[in-house]
Length: 71
Image (cartoon, rainbow, N blue to C red; front, top):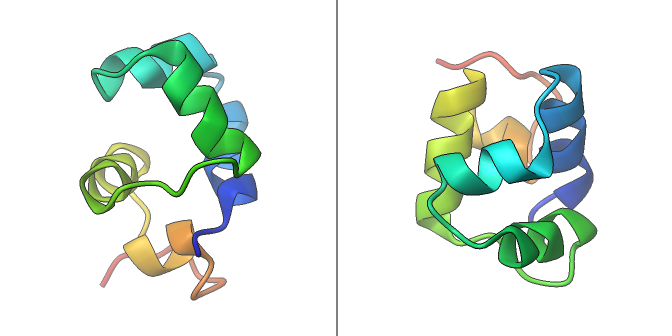
């Protein structure tokens, strides 16, 4: 299971709204909000796109690592 808190924290740290990120992911706002609340599991394609967008590793995004650096 991914670490939904990281998804929210990265968004907030980058001064983006949920609507901004939902639009970037080309999805409805309510769907994205469910990912941030941990009500739905983030699909792999969205995790990859978010990791690229925030310049962090997938491992960091999903909570498998505490280092945001990409290798």
